[in-house]
Image (cartoon, rainbow, N blue to C red; front, side, top):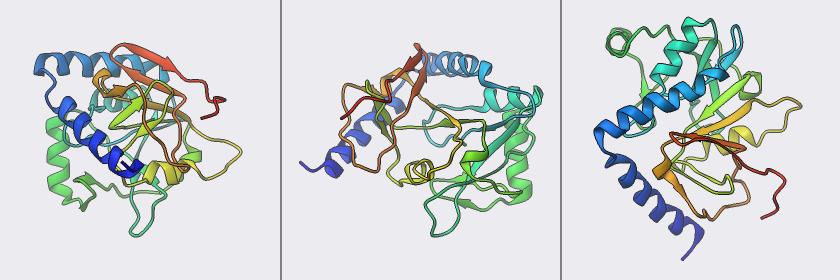
Length: 206
């Protein structure tokens, strides 16, 4: 079995596990994980998050709390025919219902798995203080399994003197013993789930 086919099978398995989480447990875990992320909020500092789709962990509580506390919240922006992500300011979100109305009123163009693309001054990832990264899976060494588009790997592989603090987030059911990696895959230094923070040794040789 090739690495690509192994990843495809693992993605399918982990998405099923995430999708079948008990509703009451998902609600509790989502709230708990978001609260664990609150200490990352810094007033007037740029915080990169993501727009959850499907059964992904929602960061709506973190986004709203960060905006209330004066942080500058940014969301990924996918430029046509580019792998490297831009980040644009997240509009003020007061609650999920108002957010849905905002999307309808502005008739936002939607790309790539129904992710809204917000307008505004675009910046690259290295201008962010902290970047919260979604995942399909992660192993006990910090190897991340994404959606397969390669956007975060392409974004974070660009060499800069300063990089954002990278935090991978998800539910505990998304962690597996081992994920086979490609040379271009970027390891995560930290994973946060409902069980707390996990820190990985980035000096480890594979």
